[in-house]
Length: 111
Image 1 (cartoon, rainbow, N blue to C red):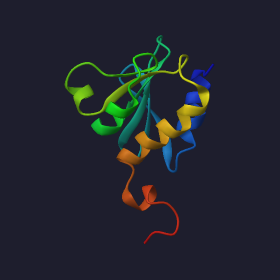
Image 2: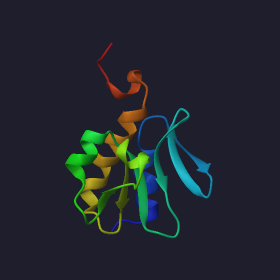
Image 3: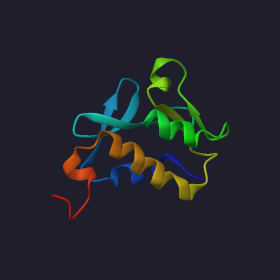
Image 4: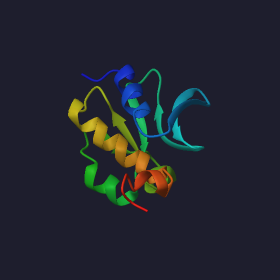
């Protein structure tokens, strides 16, 4: 089962990611843009996905859209204690890539 520390470790493994407060939550950002927030006390995070990725990933158990307009724009809740641990790095990378500058998200070898 994934823990908050697992979430933190995976989020901070993204290139140039850093942790910063966001209201009453912890956020993970690249530059000034948030790609993940860690909620307390619920065992959930919010990932900034694009709407198409969100639609393909929602499973009704561990992954669901945030209610309202934020959710329609791709903000997605992930209940990390219900998620298969091997899935989180890929989901986190997708959220990170949605907000990362192109110079980072293209990866090595791209001009």
